[in-house]
Amino acid sequence: MAPPQGPRPPLEFGGPLGAAALTLLLPATMFHLLLVARSGPARLLGPPPSLPGLEVLWSPRVLLLWLTWLGLQAGLYLLPASKMAEGQELKDKSRLRYPINGFQALVLTALLVGLGVAAGLPLVTLPEMLLPLAFAATLTAFIFSLLLYVKSLVAPAWALAPGGNSGNPIYDFFLGRELNPQAGFLDIKYFCELRPGLIGWVLINLSLLMQEVELRGSPSLAMCLVNGFQLLYVGDALWHEEAILTTMDITHDGFGFMLAFGDLAWVPFTYSLQAQFLLHHPQPLGLPMASIICFINVIGYYIFRGANSQKNTFRKNPSDPRVADLETISTATGRRLLVSGWWGMVRHPNYLGDLIMALAWSLPCGVCHLLPYFYLFYFTVLLVHREARDEQQCLQKYGLAWHEYCQRVPYRIVPYIY
Ligand code: NDP
Image (cartoon, rainbow, N blue to C red; front, side, top):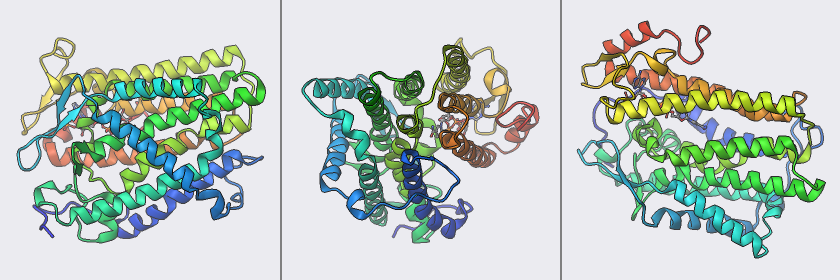
Protein backbone atom coordinates (compact mmCIF):
# COMPACT_ATOMS: atom_id res chain seq x y z
CA MET A 1 0.00 0.00 0.00
CA ALA A 2 1.36 3.44 -0.92
CA PRO A 3 2.15 5.57 2.13
CA PRO A 4 0.06 8.73 2.48
CA GLN A 5 1.82 12.04 1.92
CA GLY A 6 1.89 14.93 4.39
CA PRO A 7 -0.02 15.27 7.67
CA ARG A 8 -3.33 13.44 7.81
CA PRO A 9 -6.40 15.70 7.99
CA PRO A 10 -8.74 15.21 10.98
CA LEU A 11 -11.36 12.46 10.57
CA GLU A 12 -14.81 13.63 9.47
CA PHE A 13 -18.34 12.21 9.82
CA GLY A 14 -17.62 10.87 13.32
CA GLY A 15 -14.63 8.73 12.22
CA PRO A 16 -14.92 4.99 11.48
CA LEU A 17 -17.95 4.56 13.75
CA GLY A 18 -19.82 7.40 12.04
CA ALA A 19 -18.82 6.06 8.62
CA ALA A 20 -20.07 2.56 9.51
CA ALA A 21 -23.34 3.96 10.86
CA LEU A 22 -23.91 6.13 7.77
CA THR A 23 -23.15 3.22 5.43
CA LEU A 24 -26.11 1.39 6.95
CA LEU A 25 -28.33 4.35 7.86
CA LEU A 26 -28.37 6.08 4.47
CA PRO A 27 -29.77 3.09 2.50
CA ALA A 28 -32.18 2.29 5.37
CA THR A 29 -33.46 5.90 5.33
CA MET A 30 -33.88 5.83 1.56
CA PHE A 31 -35.99 2.65 1.66
CA HIS A 32 -38.00 4.02 4.59
CA LEU A 33 -38.80 7.17 2.58
CA LEU A 34 -39.74 5.20 -0.54
CA LEU A 35 -42.12 3.04 1.50
CA VAL A 36 -43.63 6.00 3.38
CA ALA A 37 -44.26 7.89 0.10
CA ARG A 38 -46.49 5.10 -1.20
CA SER A 39 -48.19 4.32 2.13
CA GLY A 40 -51.69 5.67 2.87
CA PRO A 41 -50.90 8.00 5.81
CA ALA A 42 -47.44 8.98 4.40
CA ARG A 43 -46.31 9.72 7.97
CA LEU A 44 -42.61 10.58 7.98
CA LEU A 45 -42.31 10.30 11.75
CA GLY A 46 -44.76 7.46 12.31
CA PRO A 47 -43.86 3.78 12.68
CA PRO A 48 -42.06 2.45 9.59
CA PRO A 49 -44.27 0.71 7.04
CA SER A 50 -43.68 -3.03 7.08
CA LEU A 51 -40.59 -4.08 5.13
CA PRO A 52 -41.28 -5.82 1.83
CA GLY A 53 -39.81 -9.27 1.27
CA LEU A 54 -36.66 -9.84 -0.75
CA GLU A 55 -38.82 -10.94 -3.70
CA VAL A 56 -40.13 -7.34 -3.96
CA LEU A 57 -36.66 -5.80 -3.75
CA TRP A 58 -34.63 -8.21 -5.82
CA SER A 59 -35.34 -8.64 -9.51
CA PRO A 60 -32.67 -9.78 -12.01
CA ARG A 61 -34.73 -8.13 -14.78
CA VAL A 62 -34.67 -4.76 -12.97
CA LEU A 63 -30.96 -5.15 -12.21
CA LEU A 64 -30.39 -5.67 -15.95
CA LEU A 65 -32.48 -2.58 -16.68
CA TRP A 66 -30.38 -0.56 -14.21
CA LEU A 67 -27.10 -1.82 -15.71
CA THR A 68 -28.42 -0.99 -19.21
CA TRP A 69 -29.13 2.54 -17.96
CA LEU A 70 -25.58 2.87 -16.61
CA GLY A 71 -24.25 1.47 -19.92
CA LEU A 72 -26.33 3.93 -21.95
CA GLN A 73 -25.08 6.88 -19.92
CA ALA A 74 -21.48 5.62 -20.17
CA GLY A 75 -21.93 5.35 -23.95
CA LEU A 76 -23.24 8.93 -24.13
CA TYR A 77 -20.28 10.08 -21.98
CA LEU A 78 -17.85 8.56 -24.47
CA LEU A 79 -19.44 10.29 -27.49
CA PRO A 80 -17.33 13.11 -28.97
CA ALA A 81 -17.69 16.30 -26.91
CA SER A 82 -17.63 19.79 -28.40
CA LYS A 83 -15.38 20.84 -25.53
CA MET A 84 -12.78 19.18 -23.29
CA ALA A 85 -12.01 20.94 -19.98
CA GLU A 86 -8.95 20.61 -17.79
CA GLY A 87 -9.35 19.79 -14.12
CA GLN A 88 -7.34 21.33 -11.30
CA GLU A 89 -3.66 20.52 -10.96
CA LEU A 90 -3.07 17.18 -9.25
CA LYS A 91 -0.32 16.33 -6.76
CA ASP A 92 1.92 15.01 -9.59
CA LYS A 93 1.43 18.39 -11.41
CA SER A 94 -0.69 16.76 -14.15
CA ARG A 95 -4.27 17.73 -15.04
CA LEU A 96 -7.06 15.41 -16.11
CA ARG A 97 -9.19 16.26 -19.16
CA TYR A 98 -12.96 15.94 -18.99
CA PRO A 99 -15.60 15.83 -21.78
CA ILE A 100 -18.18 18.61 -21.43
CA ASN A 101 -21.11 16.77 -22.98
CA GLY A 102 -23.49 16.27 -20.04
CA PHE A 103 -26.22 18.48 -21.50
CA GLN A 104 -25.84 16.63 -24.81
CA ALA A 105 -26.33 13.37 -22.85
CA LEU A 106 -29.56 14.78 -21.33
CA VAL A 107 -30.92 15.81 -24.74
CA LEU A 108 -29.96 12.50 -26.38
CA THR A 109 -31.52 10.58 -23.48
CA ALA A 110 -34.74 12.61 -23.89
CA LEU A 111 -34.69 11.84 -27.63
CA LEU A 112 -34.08 8.12 -27.09
CA VAL A 113 -36.75 7.90 -24.38
CA GLY A 114 -39.20 9.84 -26.59
CA LEU A 115 -38.57 7.47 -29.50
CA GLY A 116 -38.81 4.50 -27.12
CA VAL A 117 -42.15 5.64 -25.71
CA ALA A 118 -43.50 6.25 -29.24
CA ALA A 119 -42.42 2.70 -30.09
CA GLY A 120 -44.22 1.27 -27.05
CA LEU A 121 -41.60 1.48 -24.24
CA PRO A 122 -43.74 1.26 -21.06
CA LEU A 123 -42.15 4.21 -19.19
CA VAL A 124 -45.39 4.54 -17.27
CA THR A 125 -44.57 1.30 -15.39
CA LEU A 126 -41.29 2.70 -14.01
CA PRO A 127 -42.89 3.92 -10.72
CA GLU A 128 -43.80 0.30 -9.92
CA MET A 129 -40.13 -0.66 -10.18
CA LEU A 130 -38.76 2.03 -7.86
CA LEU A 131 -38.08 -0.33 -4.94
CA PRO A 132 -36.15 -2.98 -6.92
CA LEU A 133 -34.41 -0.22 -8.89
CA ALA A 134 -33.30 1.48 -5.67
CA PHE A 135 -32.12 -1.92 -4.40
CA ALA A 136 -30.13 -2.51 -7.63
CA ALA A 137 -28.59 0.98 -7.37
CA THR A 138 -27.64 0.41 -3.71
CA LEU A 139 -26.09 -2.95 -4.53
CA THR A 140 -24.13 -1.38 -7.40
CA ALA A 141 -22.90 1.40 -5.11
CA PHE A 142 -21.69 -1.14 -2.51
CA ILE A 143 -19.91 -3.32 -5.09
CA PHE A 144 -18.47 -0.29 -6.91
CA SER A 145 -17.07 1.23 -3.71
CA LEU A 146 -15.63 -2.10 -2.60
CA LEU A 147 -13.89 -2.63 -5.96
CA LEU A 148 -12.63 0.95 -5.95
CA TYR A 149 -11.30 0.52 -2.42
CA VAL A 150 -9.38 -2.60 -3.50
CA LYS A 151 -8.14 -0.81 -6.65
CA SER A 152 -6.96 2.13 -4.53
CA LEU A 153 -4.66 -0.15 -2.50
CA VAL A 154 -2.28 -0.29 -5.47
CA ALA A 155 -2.75 3.36 -6.50
CA PRO A 156 0.29 5.66 -6.22
CA ALA A 157 0.35 8.02 -3.20
CA TRP A 158 -0.18 11.11 -5.37
CA ALA A 159 -3.49 9.68 -6.64
CA LEU A 160 -5.05 9.44 -3.17
CA ALA A 161 -7.65 11.86 -1.81
CA PRO A 162 -6.50 14.08 1.07
CA GLY A 163 -9.19 12.75 3.41
CA GLY A 164 -9.82 9.12 2.48
CA ASN A 165 -6.59 7.37 3.42
CA SER A 166 -6.72 7.22 7.20
CA GLY A 167 -5.67 3.56 7.27
CA ASN A 168 -9.05 2.50 8.72
CA PRO A 169 -10.72 0.35 6.02
CA ILE A 170 -14.32 1.24 7.00
CA TYR A 171 -13.65 4.97 7.07
CA ASP A 172 -11.66 4.86 3.82
CA PHE A 173 -14.29 2.67 2.11
CA PHE A 174 -16.91 5.29 3.05
CA LEU A 175 -14.95 8.42 2.15
CA GLY A 176 -13.06 6.98 -0.82
CA ARG A 177 -9.28 6.54 -1.01
CA GLU A 178 -8.56 7.40 -4.63
CA LEU A 179 -9.32 10.96 -5.75
CA ASN A 180 -10.03 10.38 -9.46
CA PRO A 181 -10.40 6.66 -10.23
CA GLN A 182 -10.38 6.01 -13.97
CA ALA A 183 -11.76 3.13 -16.07
CA GLY A 184 -10.25 3.50 -19.52
CA PHE A 185 -11.50 6.81 -20.94
CA LEU A 186 -14.11 7.16 -18.21
CA ASP A 187 -13.48 9.22 -15.07
CA ILE A 188 -15.72 7.24 -12.71
CA LYS A 189 -16.45 10.02 -10.17
CA TYR A 190 -17.04 12.74 -12.77
CA PHE A 191 -19.34 10.37 -14.69
CA CYS A 192 -21.38 9.38 -11.64
CA GLU A 193 -21.70 12.91 -10.21
CA LEU A 194 -24.00 14.38 -12.85
CA ARG A 195 -25.25 11.71 -15.23
CA PRO A 196 -26.91 8.39 -14.28
CA GLY A 197 -28.41 9.72 -11.04
CA LEU A 198 -29.33 13.24 -12.09
CA ILE A 199 -30.78 12.28 -15.48
CA GLY A 200 -32.39 9.26 -13.81
CA TRP A 201 -34.08 11.60 -11.32
CA VAL A 202 -35.88 13.59 -14.05
CA LEU A 203 -36.80 10.38 -15.85
CA ILE A 204 -38.37 8.99 -12.66
CA ASN A 205 -40.25 12.30 -12.22
CA LEU A 206 -41.52 12.09 -15.80
CA SER A 207 -42.69 8.49 -15.35
CA LEU A 208 -44.57 9.54 -12.19
CA LEU A 209 -46.27 12.33 -14.15
CA MET A 210 -47.20 9.87 -16.90
CA GLN A 211 -48.65 7.45 -14.39
CA GLU A 212 -50.65 10.28 -12.85
CA VAL A 213 -52.10 11.04 -16.31
CA GLU A 214 -52.99 7.38 -16.73
CA LEU A 215 -54.66 7.26 -13.30
CA ARG A 216 -56.46 10.62 -13.29
CA GLY A 217 -56.71 11.67 -16.92
CA SER A 218 -54.42 14.73 -16.74
CA PRO A 219 -51.33 15.88 -14.85
CA SER A 220 -51.96 17.95 -11.73
CA LEU A 221 -50.60 21.49 -11.47
CA ALA A 222 -48.54 20.42 -8.43
CA MET A 223 -46.93 17.54 -10.38
CA CYS A 224 -46.20 19.87 -13.34
CA LEU A 225 -44.49 22.40 -11.04
CA VAL A 226 -42.34 19.76 -9.32
CA ASN A 227 -41.35 18.26 -12.69
CA GLY A 228 -40.64 21.68 -14.20
CA PHE A 229 -38.58 23.02 -11.27
CA GLN A 230 -36.47 19.90 -10.95
CA LEU A 231 -35.91 19.61 -14.71
CA LEU A 232 -34.67 23.21 -14.66
CA TYR A 233 -32.26 22.30 -11.81
CA VAL A 234 -30.89 19.22 -13.57
CA GLY A 235 -30.70 20.97 -16.96
CA ASP A 236 -28.85 23.86 -15.32
CA ALA A 237 -26.36 21.52 -13.59
CA LEU A 238 -25.60 19.77 -16.89
CA TRP A 239 -25.47 23.03 -18.88
CA HIS A 240 -22.87 24.32 -16.41
CA GLU A 241 -21.18 20.94 -16.10
CA GLU A 242 -17.69 22.43 -16.23
CA ALA A 243 -18.34 24.21 -12.91
CA ILE A 244 -18.29 20.87 -11.10
CA LEU A 245 -14.55 20.57 -11.76
CA THR A 246 -13.81 23.09 -9.01
CA THR A 247 -16.23 21.66 -6.41
CA MET A 248 -14.96 19.81 -3.34
CA ASP A 249 -16.52 16.56 -4.59
CA ILE A 250 -14.09 16.55 -7.52
CA THR A 251 -11.04 18.32 -6.06
CA HIS A 252 -11.04 17.02 -2.49
CA ASP A 253 -13.23 13.97 -1.82
CA GLY A 254 -12.26 10.49 -2.91
CA PHE A 255 -14.80 8.27 -4.66
CA GLY A 256 -16.08 5.97 -1.94
CA PHE A 257 -19.46 4.75 -0.73
CA MET A 258 -20.54 8.26 0.31
CA LEU A 259 -20.42 9.64 -3.23
CA ALA A 260 -21.20 6.39 -5.07
CA PHE A 261 -24.38 5.78 -3.06
CA GLY A 262 -25.24 9.50 -3.07
CA ASP A 263 -24.87 9.86 -6.83
CA LEU A 264 -26.37 6.56 -7.96
CA ALA A 265 -29.10 5.84 -5.40
CA TRP A 266 -29.84 8.68 -2.98
CA VAL A 267 -30.24 11.43 -5.60
CA PRO A 268 -32.61 9.73 -8.07
CA PHE A 269 -34.74 7.95 -5.48
CA THR A 270 -35.03 10.47 -2.65
CA TYR A 271 -34.88 13.68 -4.70
CA SER A 272 -37.95 12.42 -6.61
CA LEU A 273 -39.89 12.04 -3.32
CA GLN A 274 -42.17 15.01 -3.97
CA ALA A 275 -43.35 13.56 -7.30
CA GLN A 276 -43.70 10.10 -5.68
CA PHE A 277 -45.76 11.63 -2.89
CA LEU A 278 -48.00 13.50 -5.34
CA LEU A 279 -48.75 10.36 -7.35
CA HIS A 280 -50.08 8.60 -4.25
CA HIS A 281 -51.48 11.69 -2.46
CA PRO A 282 -52.88 14.22 -4.98
CA GLN A 283 -52.90 17.79 -3.65
CA PRO A 284 -55.13 20.63 -4.86
CA LEU A 285 -53.20 23.70 -5.97
CA GLY A 286 -54.80 26.91 -7.27
CA LEU A 287 -53.23 29.32 -9.75
CA PRO A 288 -52.55 32.13 -7.22
CA MET A 289 -50.59 29.78 -4.92
CA ALA A 290 -48.84 28.21 -7.92
CA SER A 291 -47.75 31.70 -9.05
CA ILE A 292 -46.33 32.48 -5.59
CA ILE A 293 -44.42 29.16 -5.59
CA CYS A 294 -43.04 29.89 -9.10
CA PHE A 295 -41.90 33.29 -7.85
CA ILE A 296 -40.09 31.68 -4.90
CA ASN A 297 -38.36 29.26 -7.28
CA VAL A 298 -37.33 32.13 -9.58
CA ILE A 299 -35.83 34.04 -6.63
CA GLY A 300 -33.94 30.94 -5.47
CA TYR A 301 -32.68 30.19 -8.96
CA TYR A 302 -31.64 33.81 -9.51
CA ILE A 303 -29.48 33.80 -6.34
CA PHE A 304 -28.13 30.27 -6.96
CA ARG A 305 -27.16 30.88 -10.59
CA GLY A 306 -25.95 34.45 -10.00
CA ALA A 307 -23.65 33.38 -7.14
CA ASN A 308 -22.29 30.26 -8.86
CA SER A 309 -21.67 32.04 -12.18
CA GLN A 310 -20.03 35.02 -10.48
CA LYS A 311 -17.53 32.80 -8.66
CA ASN A 312 -16.86 30.59 -11.70
CA THR A 313 -16.30 33.62 -13.95
CA PHE A 314 -13.98 35.14 -11.35
CA ARG A 315 -12.01 31.92 -10.86
CA LYS A 316 -11.64 31.43 -14.63
CA ASN A 317 -10.63 35.01 -15.39
CA PRO A 318 -10.55 37.68 -12.65
CA SER A 319 -10.24 40.40 -15.31
CA ASP A 320 -13.51 39.43 -16.99
CA PRO A 321 -15.53 42.70 -17.27
CA ARG A 322 -18.46 41.05 -15.44
CA VAL A 323 -16.39 40.66 -12.26
CA ALA A 324 -13.44 43.00 -12.73
CA ASP A 325 -15.07 45.77 -10.66
CA LEU A 326 -15.83 43.59 -7.64
CA GLU A 327 -13.89 44.19 -4.44
CA THR A 328 -11.46 41.41 -3.49
CA ILE A 329 -8.88 40.54 -0.85
CA SER A 330 -5.52 38.96 -1.64
CA THR A 331 -4.34 35.68 -0.14
CA ALA A 332 -0.85 34.23 0.28
CA THR A 333 -1.62 31.65 -2.43
CA GLY A 334 -1.97 34.33 -5.10
CA ARG A 335 -5.69 33.61 -5.49
CA ARG A 336 -8.06 36.37 -4.40
CA LEU A 337 -11.38 36.19 -2.56
CA LEU A 338 -14.46 38.16 -3.57
CA VAL A 339 -15.81 40.40 -0.81
CA SER A 340 -18.50 42.21 -2.75
CA GLY A 341 -21.28 41.12 -5.11
CA TRP A 342 -23.04 37.87 -4.14
CA TRP A 343 -20.00 36.66 -2.14
CA GLY A 344 -20.05 39.86 -0.08
CA MET A 345 -23.64 39.20 1.08
CA VAL A 346 -22.98 35.87 2.80
CA ARG A 347 -20.11 33.37 2.56
CA HIS A 348 -22.24 30.83 0.67
CA PRO A 349 -24.90 32.69 -1.32
CA ASN A 350 -25.22 29.71 -3.70
CA TYR A 351 -26.41 27.52 -0.78
CA LEU A 352 -29.03 30.14 0.12
CA GLY A 353 -30.45 30.07 -3.42
CA ASP A 354 -30.41 26.27 -3.43
CA LEU A 355 -32.35 26.16 -0.14
CA ILE A 356 -34.98 28.63 -1.39
CA MET A 357 -35.50 26.40 -4.43
CA ALA A 358 -35.79 23.35 -2.14
CA LEU A 359 -38.67 25.13 -0.37
CA ALA A 360 -40.37 25.84 -3.72
CA TRP A 361 -40.15 22.14 -4.65
CA SER A 362 -41.93 21.11 -1.45
CA LEU A 363 -44.69 23.74 -1.33
CA PRO A 364 -46.75 22.29 -4.26
CA CYS A 365 -47.31 19.24 -2.01
CA GLY A 366 -49.29 21.29 0.52
CA VAL A 367 -48.58 21.71 4.20
CA CYS A 368 -50.39 18.70 5.70
CA HIS A 369 -47.51 16.21 5.35
CA LEU A 370 -43.88 16.40 6.45
CA LEU A 371 -42.61 13.89 3.89
CA PRO A 372 -42.35 16.29 0.91
CA TYR A 373 -40.32 18.62 3.17
CA PHE A 374 -37.80 15.87 3.93
CA TYR A 375 -35.57 17.19 1.11
CA LEU A 376 -35.59 20.68 2.61
CA PHE A 377 -34.64 19.38 6.10
CA TYR A 378 -32.00 16.98 4.84
CA PHE A 379 -30.58 19.55 2.43
CA THR A 380 -30.31 22.16 5.19
CA VAL A 381 -28.32 19.70 7.32
CA LEU A 382 -26.18 18.72 4.31
CA LEU A 383 -25.38 22.31 3.34
CA VAL A 384 -24.68 23.45 6.92
CA HIS A 385 -22.27 20.52 7.30
CA ARG A 386 -20.79 21.08 3.83
CA GLU A 387 -20.33 24.76 4.59
CA ALA A 388 -18.42 23.89 7.77
CA ARG A 389 -16.19 21.45 5.83
CA ASP A 390 -15.54 24.07 3.15
CA GLU A 391 -14.72 26.73 5.78
CA GLN A 392 -12.18 24.36 7.33
CA GLN A 393 -10.55 23.73 3.95
CA CYS A 394 -10.53 27.46 3.08
CA LEU A 395 -8.99 28.25 6.46
CA GLN A 396 -6.21 25.77 5.72
CA LYS A 397 -5.75 27.19 2.20
CA TYR A 398 -5.98 30.92 2.94
CA GLY A 399 -5.17 31.30 6.67
CA LEU A 400 -5.26 34.96 7.75
CA ALA A 401 -6.96 36.11 4.55
CA TRP A 402 -9.86 33.75 5.31
CA HIS A 403 -10.14 35.26 8.81
CA GLU A 404 -10.34 38.70 7.22
CA TYR A 405 -13.03 37.49 4.80
CA CYS A 406 -15.05 36.10 7.71
CA GLN A 407 -14.80 39.45 9.50
CA ARG A 408 -15.89 41.37 6.40
CA VAL A 409 -18.69 38.89 5.59
CA PRO A 410 -19.85 37.58 8.98
CA TYR A 411 -22.88 35.48 7.91
CA ARG A 412 -22.44 32.03 6.43
CA ILE A 413 -25.63 31.24 4.48
CA VAL A 414 -28.59 33.40 5.57
CA PRO A 415 -28.00 37.16 6.03
CA TYR A 416 -28.43 38.32 9.66
CA ILE A 417 -29.52 34.82 10.76
CA TYR A 418 -26.74 32.27 10.14
P1 NDP B 1 -18.97 26.12 -3.76
O1 NDP B 1 -19.36 26.39 -5.18
O2 NDP B 1 -19.72 26.82 -2.72
O3 NDP B 1 -17.43 26.43 -3.65
C1 NDP B 1 -16.72 26.65 -2.46
C2 NDP B 1 -15.37 27.17 -2.89
O4 NDP B 1 -15.52 28.45 -3.47
C3 NDP B 1 -14.38 27.37 -1.77
O5 NDP B 1 -13.73 26.17 -1.42
C4 NDP B 1 -13.41 28.35 -2.41
O6 NDP B 1 -12.58 27.57 -3.30
C5 NDP B 1 -14.33 29.21 -3.25
N1 NDP B 1 -14.72 30.42 -2.56
C6 NDP B 1 -15.32 30.53 -1.35
N2 NDP B 1 -15.54 31.80 -1.03
C7 NDP B 1 -15.06 32.54 -2.06
C8 NDP B 1 -14.99 33.93 -2.33
N3 NDP B 1 -15.45 34.83 -1.46
N4 NDP B 1 -14.43 34.34 -3.49
C9 NDP B 1 -13.97 33.43 -4.38
N5 NDP B 1 -14.00 32.10 -4.18
C10 NDP B 1 -14.55 31.66 -3.03
O7 NDP B 1 -18.94 24.56 -3.53
P2 NDP B 1 -19.97 23.39 -3.50
O8 NDP B 1 -19.39 22.28 -4.28
O9 NDP B 1 -20.29 23.09 -2.07
O10 NDP B 1 -21.33 23.91 -4.20
C11 NDP B 1 -21.52 24.06 -5.61
C12 NDP B 1 -23.03 24.13 -5.88
O11 NDP B 1 -23.60 22.83 -5.79
C13 NDP B 1 -23.79 25.00 -4.86
O12 NDP B 1 -24.73 25.79 -5.54
C14 NDP B 1 -24.51 24.00 -3.99
O13 NDP B 1 -25.70 24.54 -3.48
C15 NDP B 1 -24.72 22.85 -4.96
N6 NDP B 1 -24.82 21.55 -4.29
C16 NDP B 1 -25.96 20.82 -4.49
C17 NDP B 1 -26.11 19.58 -3.90
C18 NDP B 1 -27.36 18.80 -4.10
O14 NDP B 1 -27.42 17.65 -3.67
N7 NDP B 1 -28.39 19.34 -4.73
C19 NDP B 1 -25.03 18.99 -3.07
C20 NDP B 1 -23.88 19.85 -2.94
C21 NDP B 1 -23.80 21.07 -3.53
P3 NDP B 1 -11.31 28.20 -4.11
O15 NDP B 1 -10.91 29.44 -3.39
O16 NDP B 1 -10.29 27.12 -4.08
O17 NDP B 1 -11.82 28.47 -5.48
